[in-house]
Amino acid sequence: MLNIDGFAYTNRLRQVHPLEKAAFAFITMFLCIGFSLPVFSCIIILLMAYAIIGLARIPMKVYLKLMSLPLSFLSIGVLTIAVSISTHGFGAAQLAGITISGINIGITHSGLHSAAGLFFKSLGAVSCLYFLSLTTPAVEIVDVMRKLKIPALFIELTDLIYRFIFVMLATAEDIYTSQSSRWGYASLKNSMKSLGQLTAALFIKAYHRSQTLFTALSSRGYNGRLNVLAPEYTVSVINIVIIAIVESTLAITAILLEMGKIG
Image 1 (cartoon, rainbow, N blue to C red):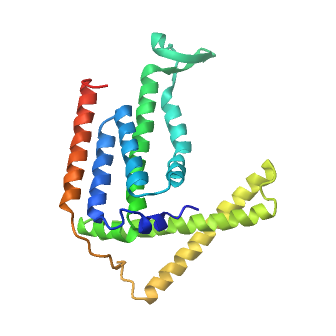
Image 2: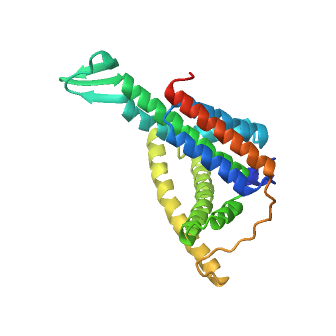
Image 3: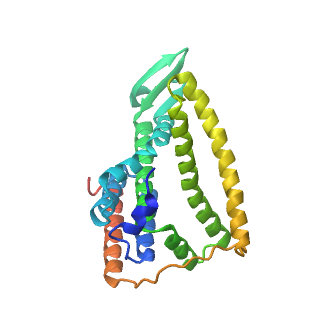
């Protein structure tokens, strides 16, 4: 299991103000979402890769493994956009396709362009979130959310869900290891059976741990707010200027790309 919290506490950008890192991540993500340009999304992916690997010194292997996680559901999602179905044909717009009982199933220029745009836009947005989560501990992200006056209920739910993701991953890994040691995945039939048992056991254990956590919090005077201590940071004027220059350059590049001035 990837120790994201470990990297968040040990990376080279650890001492940078969390608000600065959050501003860089979210402004870049909003630009990526706002402009549906595959080339621009690729630029953002490369920029975040440099920030994560080059500046924060997160191992490339870890970053690539994290980026590979959303590829499965993204591939399925963009496939439904790239493939079009029609009873009248697609004409010259069709790149490839087949006809079954009068129904045309094919890939068109517009469908392929939309699929590529969604695919790279999603990866670009994910890379921005990875930058924030790999360089900023969850405690400091929660502190940033409080400073931005985000509703307390949303903050508490976000914090609890984030922590329980790792609890469920660790539990799933333990169950999987136990099943594998008993040849639970030796065949397709055993794999399907073991996967069902893993899923059922996982949610039961997660529910039990959630009740245990609530009991522990209640015994310590929990009143609906998780109070945590976050270190004090000094805002860097140089970092703010660099962020402003980078974001302005990205915005101008996106506008020029959209107008066809470059590329």
